[in-house]
Image (cartoon, rainbow, N blue to C red; front, side, top):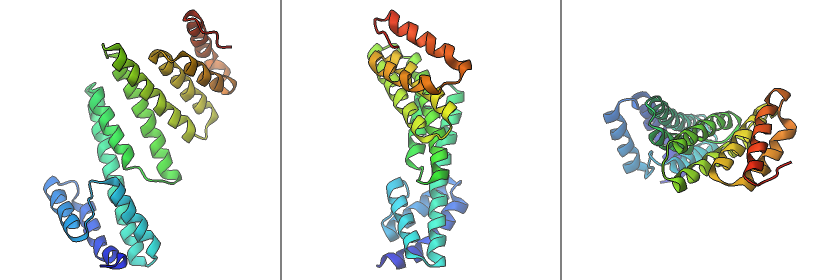
Length: 220
């Protein structure tokens, strides 16, 4: 079966998935049909993404509609995992929420609009991992979680075009690295944040510098 024929036959299934996806039985049945007929696993964000790219590349109105349906499927998956994460976060189940936010990120596509959603998810995950680390008694595990939190703050800083927000995010990253015990890395990020931090937020920088100095690292 050619890619063109596959895409043309795929879009009604994708439309049905979008319309019925909220119903777990219908979703399961449609997912199984798509996998049986086309070999596409709709639980795999990579396979869905490739199907969308293939549909966009073929060019006809029908095939572009298939691509839109595929994109909607992907957006539905992302939103579903994000909402699950939000509900778990309200229950203070930080580990469960972090797992859902990670999964939501795998369903986030490319492009400016998707990058904005990715930025929001990365920030939510970074904050959640920090909360999780704070309540972790095992020091080594807590440090690992702070490092992961810092890594996601770094991704937020790389995605944002707003300088003041980048500074705030880098400052959060520096604090997370300090909490992980990575003092040198904390200082390095702090130096990036300091020049672009608004005057009203300079106190947080001074506090972190003083704390690093107390721990034996002078970070000018």
